[in-house]
Image (cartoon, rainbow, N blue to C red; front, side, top):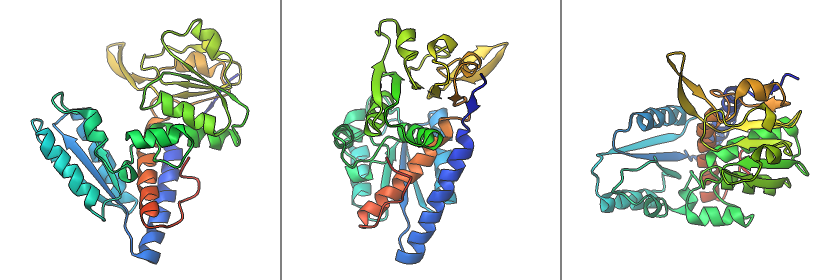
Length: 296
């Protein structure tokens, strides 16, 4: 068997196109432009590249993009004051504080100071609780992107067995909640799971979000299963730096029915879903209908 490769790059471009269409309609019919504010503390090179990419794509879909770049030694009180200002700004519908933050800042305190309605990362404790109880919330971008691709590939997910390998607050746990919401039977597996390979082989949908390069190999995959690889790991191979996922692509693709590659799979969907979340937040703030197909 040779797996269908799910093209996340193409799917993300489609999502951004849908967002741009909705934004144009908001501007035309209501005079409203969704606004996204990104806050970066310090000068981490990877974070700077990511923030620049977010800003570029925000403008491309017709949204207002605001960036606040703060020194690495910014006091916590100053950061909280900026977030309070953004919370009160009616032109800003989404607020994202780029993680990780410098060590002297309390990440949980900072994230939970964001207005939950503007928390487009979906990390605020209120949004976590709403998602966990099946209520309307802002949903973390990466799991939302995975769900969109799964719905597109399978149609209905109802009744499918899903195994999520990884229990992080950012991906593993919300991914499991979203799959439950679509009526999957969900198992969360992790480093302490007994006979992990056997557990994974029971999955119709296998989500690899463990943060270990190429840990999931073909013998973990049931024939015909869909493998969603969330991992992005840099490794040295043959004297070169290479990006690989948490799943070993060649062996998994030989068994799976469908698989996301790394790079070009889940990764591009994260920013696309950030834009979708900003659009959703804007619609909710203005009492307008939410865009179909861009929410959980």
